Image (cartoon, rainbow, N blue to C red):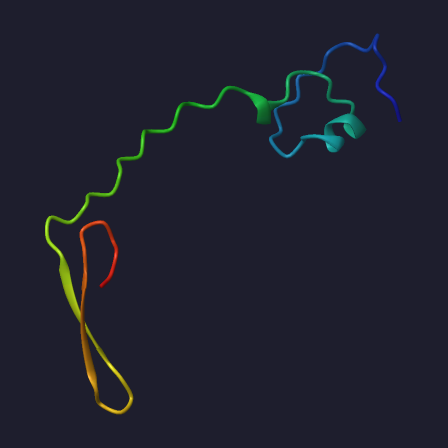
Length: 76
């Protein structure tokens, strides 16, 4: 089915009518999915911890391994 170029513009406000469904239903007005969306609030970057974090890995045989995670996320 092809869209008639002489058909009057039908405003389609149903958000489910997008893409091929819009063409099949004859919706030839502006696509509500493409309408300008309000700008999202900027996401603040995660705060870097001020101190290194110590941790201890305990193996199955009971041996403990001490480590540290530095502020940049790198373990040692």
